[in-house]
Image: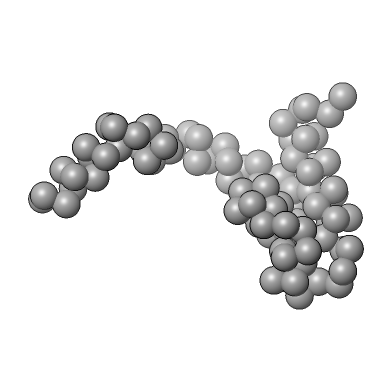
Length: 86
């Protein structure tokens, strides 16, 4: 039990350590899924994990400059899903 209480104290002291509520997790996963099959990988790597596009392309085994095009498609679909296209 001491480990759990230490985690709780840390979460109270730093809100960033608190787990997301279920509704926020679900909304996040629905947004990533809205990008479509195969597009969520590059979207997550660049937007969430903070990788650069060339690093993500290399990790996914894609040709050079393919990631930029695919990332643009994924971001357009997510913007449509959240209704933020202008």
